[in-house]
Length: 228
Image (cartoon, rainbow, N blue to C red; front, side, top):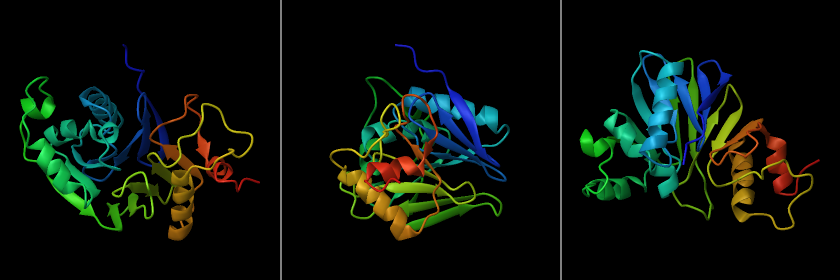
């Protein structure tokens, strides 16, 4: 099966959305690149790496931010480790990665098996800010979120953009009315945005909508029955 074509969109100065699979963000920091989300598998990771280096040439990928440790959101992380990137994840995920990545990958050797490197981690408790003085990425731990205890959301304050995984998975086309049953994950995401007092105008779901539309925060509000 042929992979979807990789596309990218400029979110703001030095910030790029990469589509063509699970959504990711590439950030152009002063001396390096930060990638948000290393999902799916080696193939998707390689596509993200290639697009990021095309958008931001002549800089290494120093960090990859991981929203959570479910396989479809972490399956590409090893390719970033092989690239030399440090994995940024919630603190409860680090022991899990250290344990499973120590196992041999011999049936279908991936990029890290072919280019062994010791994984490097930076962990997040409740909040972490990445900045080079010009660009800023804010990481927050979702509380009371039943889908995963170690879930991070990623906020770009200048762009007023929030990347999230599995809290709000928009339908293929915008909903015209609130759902009959409100997802507890979506309700928790909305409550956390309010708790953290984040000024969000656009949501980037890692599970991007099928029509590739931009998702305004109004869609999230509608999904929790607070639409206007």
